[in-house]
Image (cartoon, rainbow, N blue to C red; front, top):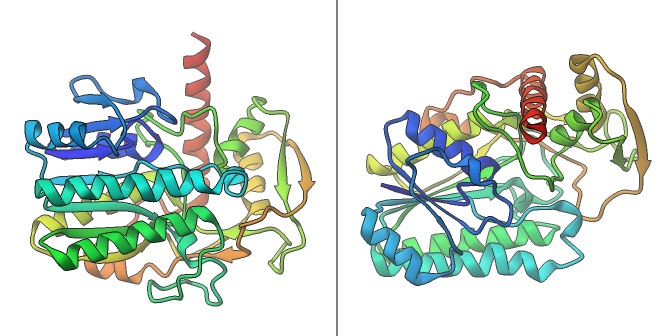
Length: 328
């Protein structure tokens, strides 16, 4: 069986659905600091607990004979990076260390880790290969990079197999409409744009319009959450089949500016909305998009939804469904 940490959150919730679709049995642990209880399908064992609780993790590993952990539990709300930096190290590094202590002592064989393109910082080259310098400029990126290092060191000291997936900007929702980003606290551009387009928010802020990009706004590589989850399924299969430890980018290799995303959202929603310009945010990189050749070569990964219009459409549909759910 597979333990999914943060399985009631945005990406972890999609992982649970994909594991069920693949005939696997997921077990979820989530402290519910950013999760929603109805994200967990009926019949999936769920435990509200902290991943740093060794006794709880040990109980789950033994009771459910866990052979793999999909590790999503983390703290990510961009404006808070510099307000409380130690919280990111506590949540993303210290707690991950505690989880890995359990992995080591209990003999869990495989770990698939949710990392981030933030480990690259302001890369001098785009698309960014996995071999690019690792110079994060935010506590979030630094905290994730520390966990990457711990995984490599632990694997070198024992029999652990791991896959590190460095996400670029995750967006969209399950194409079947089963789940999507549901937290009331979000810093994800596509979700916020969808909410503004639907009148849930009155306006959207653009943080900086003087970057050296095509239109002065930051450029990012937006990957559909379902394609990202497909990468996790492929990574787990790779490890279980005896594949080597690996670190791969998860992105499409093309960037879109903030303004381009907002224009696309307006076009699909059929509604213009107010944009307000604000100062640059500390920790925002100018432009970053993935070199995804390695994941395609090593895992045979082929994206199915690599289209910004599709990503935005699915996000809008989910947001409408979510609002109906909250109103009922």
